[in-house]
Amino acid sequence: MVSVSELKSAKAATWRAAADDAVAAVKQCEGIGSFTRDEVAATLRQCWVGDTGSAARTRFVKHADDYDAAALALRAVVTVYDDLADAIGAAQRDLTSALDYARTHELKVDDSGRVRLGKTVARHHARETGDGQGRHREQQGELHAR
Image (cartoon, rainbow, N blue to C red; front, side, top):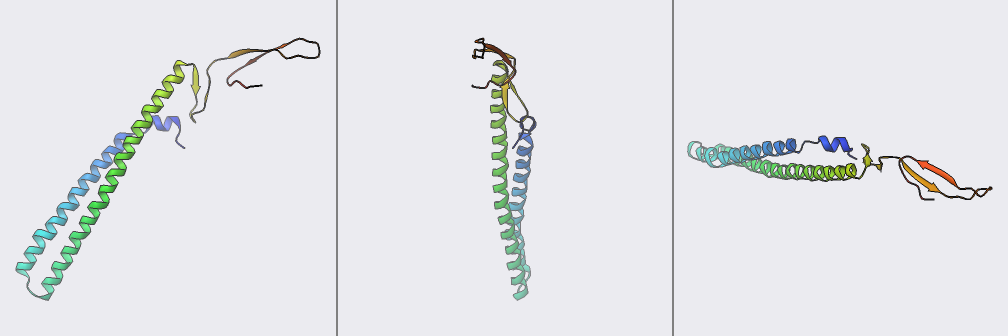
């Protein structure tokens, strides 16, 4: 579980930057795949005739396919990073709102997220004792139903 301080200090921008880096890698993979398939294979077809040239072309096309697969996988990573950045931002907005609410209503929130009353609450609890007198109790923090 994430603590209040960890969520407050989470950096959504870091995940956005990671997504941007992954997008750049996608473009590189697509570019290399396209170049390998279109340029290198075409050059080999013209300059290297025969079975060995054909095998080389087939191998370069296979590499191009591998780069295309890498680009596809990286696109999925981009989506995960973007979704994570969105989730962190939304959670931080919710946390800020909840902490503001707690502050205005004199509630204390600890790092685990537990909420308690922020001030001492005096309660009069009349309870019959053997002599017929009531008791006065004062309690700090949480109220307990009796």
